Image 1 (tube, helix red, strand yellow):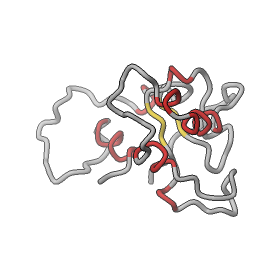
Image 2 (cartoon, rainbow, N blue to C red; image 1 turned 90 degrees about the vertical axis):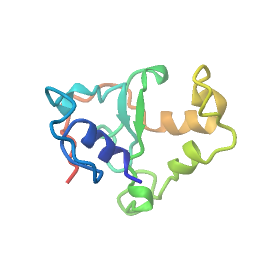
Image 3 (cartoon, rainbow, N blue to C red; image 1 turned 90 degrees about the horizontal axis):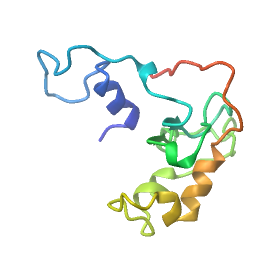
Length: 135
């Protein structure tokens, strides 16, 4: 089990998350992190910093929604919501969702998913994008 940011990091060739060694790498060039659109496609929830975290645009433009929550390791003193929001259970252990139904978006299957996504939506694009800090 790895966090989604670890999977993206491995996909982009920044770190190895398995015991398997690839030599040579299956790609000819390693893409940059900035190739992923952070405003509407590859977005994050707001945990600590609205405007640095979050997304703009439309629900149907989201490809990946990164929970960014430390799997319960949220500091309630600093968190925007003042507590941990269990998005893992909402998205992955939710009997209302049929993850195999690729024709019906998750936010249409359960209004709580729509609320969770919209909770992190910001009205306008940030003036400056802040680089992701994994380590």
